[in-house]
Length: 393
Picture 1 (spheres, rainbow, N blue to C red):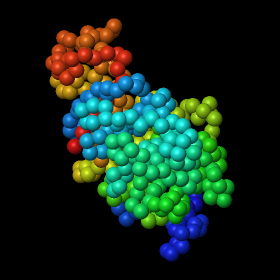
Picture 2 (tube, rainbow, N blue to C red):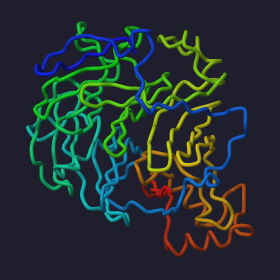
Picture 3 (cartoon, one colour):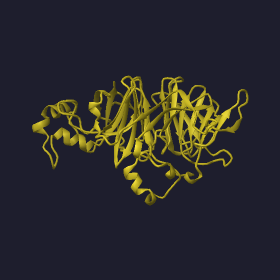
Picture 4 (spheres, rainbow, N blue to C red):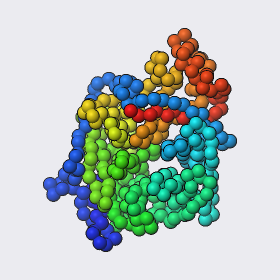
């Protein structure tokens, strides 16, 4: 993080200045807090942290078969699922798993997209926004995806775009489009005019990025930004950037001298032993939640804002007598109230049958198996992935 651009008071023009204080340190908010996670301690089960209030599982029935869930958004009584790799479509379901609509407009027409790179819900204007990076389009649909309400040209080829008050934030994923302004995050007006830009791209990382990162998140009126190999949580508002939180992993923090791009073979030993950042962050009324990779396993860093305590949790099967005898699933989305995870139909099928080729679950988990069978009279391994919905305390 070297240089950002600051919007001057009256002119929509960009001038370079630093996000650092005069002593060279990053600008921190007045409420900045450093949170320490002890990775030397054995991780606890996520079900024993107090984070999860309830759990449900829904079957996603529609004509298309899809596996990849690049992003999931829950809004009111709708669930939006974006499949980037297989069908290039956005699927809309209700909270019971009923298929409402599919947006599949891959093409080069006026209301079509070349490639979906992101989706977002504009809660103020009640639209579902679909971002197409290759042809620089932002397509706006009604919340059921039945009508295209308009198409806007974006200022550049963004991979992520997030609606904020009076405009947008755009993210280019280390692609330098202007050598004079090599920045990753851009603040835009409602008319896609550039108002400010932030976070200079390290030239060694040009056109290289980590897949699967949820770079923006929201809590109340705060917009947060995260970036790989950086353990700060940044807030962006009114053309200003502050460090709101810093996560300290102690000896397991990724070494600063390795933040420039290195070939995978040069960093292999560090990738196994160190934490090189987190791919998701969410604040709620009670918690700070982040997901990171350590020793080949995804773990969850959880900070209790009320009790001022932090712990590391591992994602495990549900405990005896609770929920269903199934895996926690692969987390594909987190918001202020909910964690969304997907689970392959084969896993659900094994749990529904009560055994697989290795284990008979019935003697120990009969109650959980019966609960699953009552919920789903039929389960097929050919089904689309099942969606697990965890409500947050």
